Every structure is written in C-alpha cells, then in structure tokens.
Length: 432
Image 1 (cartoon, rainbow, N blue to C red):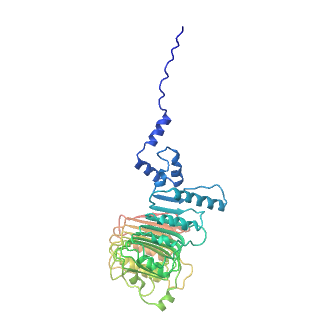
Image 2 (image 1 turned 180 degrees about the vertical axis):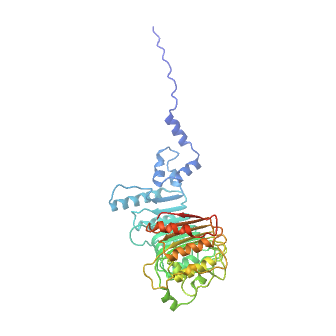
Image 3 (image 1 turned 60 degrees about the vertical axis):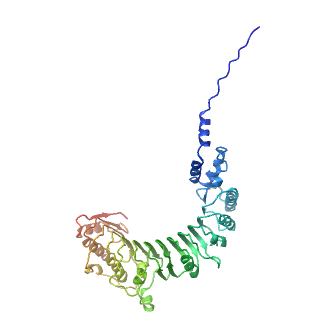
C-alpha cells in the first residue's frame, strides 16, 4: 500500500497592493475628512470606490464647490452641458447628509437657470456660512428670497445678479464679507443692505447699475474696494476703515460740476476716515476729488496712511492741486505709487510749471519706496520726479516704468541727472 503525503501550502502573504489598500481603508476619520475637503467635488465623489469605509464619506464634506475645475466636458453642446451640470449638482445635494458651510457655483457654461433657486433653497436649510454665485452667462440672475434668510452667512459673493431682497429682510447679522460684481441694485436696497450688516468688515462693489450716490454706513468696515460709474460717495460711521481702493470709470467735467456745487469733495471724503492706512485712487477719481474747494492740506492729517497710489493726469492743474493736498496731508507716508493718465484732449487748465514751485514747508520725512508708471517723459511728469527726489531724504528706491519705448534713452539720461536728497536712493528703470 502506498502512502501519499500532501504538503501543506504555505500561507499567502498579503500583497503589496493589499497592504496599500488596507492602509487607505484604515486611515483615521478626521484624516479622510481633510483629504476629501481638498479634492474637487468630482474626485471626492469618486473616492467611494476606494473602500467600504470611504463609501459616501464625501456626502458629509461641508464645502461644496461647483466650478470649471470640477467638471470638464468634451461636448460643445450647451444643452447637454447644462443638463449634465444640473443632474450632477442635484445628485450631490440629494445624497449629502451633513451640514453645508460653503456653497460655490461658478461654472462658465451655466446660465442663470431656475434650478439655482432649488439649490439655494436646499442650502438655506443648513447652517450655510459662505455663498458664492457667479453666473457667467445670460441675463442678471435674481436670487430667491430664501437666500436672505441665511442668518449664519459670513461671506456672500454675487456676480451678474439682480439684488432685490424681500421687504421683511432685516439684514445679515453675522456677515463679515460682501462682494458684489456686475450687479443691479437700487439706491435704497444698497444703503439698507450695507447698514443692516453690523459685522461687515469687507465690502467690494464693482461694475454696478442702479446706484449713483454711494453712502457707506458700516461701523466695523475695514476694507472697501469699489470701481464703477457713480456721481458721489460718502462715508458715515466708518472709523475703523483702513483700506480704500476706489475707481471712477468715467471722466467728469469739473467746470460744470463746480458751477452746481462748490463744496469740497476732498474734505467730505476724508472726514470719516480717521484711521485710513492704505488708499488707492484709480481711473478718474482724483478728478472727482478735485471738484470744488481744494485746501492746501486736510485739517485732520492722515497720520496712519503709509501707502498711497494715485492715477493722475500730470498736465491737469486741478488734479495736481488735489494730489499735492493729499501728499501734504500724509506726514508718515512710506510708499507712493503714481500712475500717469495722459489725456489727449481736455478743456481743463493745463499745468506747465506746477511741480517747479516751492510747495513745501516740510519734506517726505519717511518716504522710502516710490513707483512712477505710464509716463512718456513730458515736462510735467519729469518735474514731479525731480521734485520727489529732491524732497525725500530717506528714499531708498524709485522705480520708473514708461508707457512706451519711444525716447526711453533720453528719459533715462535725464533721470540720472536729477539731484537726490537721499544718498541711498536707487533709481530703477523698467522696460514698458
């Protein structure tokens, strides 16, 4: 009788792939949450296939972002793209079973469709803190009234929207940041919106219609950035405002405005800005500030202002006068940027020797960095640079960037001939 001895098969060791799989599936829950929070929503949903532990873990992520980084469609059919987007967002919101703190909708192929109303209604039932709606195509989108019931909102950003809150709207009590771009809003609605957000710290307003007289009443406002077409701007109860960037996108006729109103725009603009630290005057806003009476300096100096940027027509006498008032009123200025805005034709009185005169009883005692851009080398521009160099004893760097290469060699030679009050001042010439 023969005996057959069967050898025991050695136990199979886990493969490297299995080990890696186990390592992924055994990650702590908070680590998985951190990973998912950094993924586009498309990849977060796909993570369900990694392991049973990851399945539907994405449904609890608090930040939902639907933008062009999340979806990439090869089809050019707009109807197909729109339907696909709507189905995906519907699917995500349907399966989501946790709090939603952030909702961002910013896909460039999505129109202001009625489906957005449904999504906003869904997120309004959560403790939503941040809403970003950027409607890149189609007419202005009017957000539904339920958006204005989101009292936990901290940040609201709207692009290409028609803003019309319900009559019972009492403001956003916790809102700290409001960003409105390419919007339509009435004068009364804008003023009520700003004044009824007592915690507001940052306000951005760009390319708007419906508001001509901007009244900013915000006791905690620190940052204000505006660019558009308007007739007037004033600040009320803004003692904490420290950063202001303001651009008027249309030229104005000072002679016509002076005939109607001879009050000082400069005095009224700064009266409620006692602690401003950074000021950027863009486009034609300096021309607005030059309207009416312009004092030699402000009665209350801007002692905290250390950065000043001005877009100016160096050939305009009134703009130069307003700029000089500002420079005299900032005794602690550290950085100055002057951007030339030459006008081809103007009915205003031209400045020929403005910066040659002795305007100063004191110097730029603290000015260290200066940048002058967009110049063409005309006399008024060079006079300003010469004046600046001779009155800045601690200047460290002057950067000059011309508008074009025409005549740049002569411009460079003239710059090097100017006397410098600071022996440490370095002149840097940048190609246009």
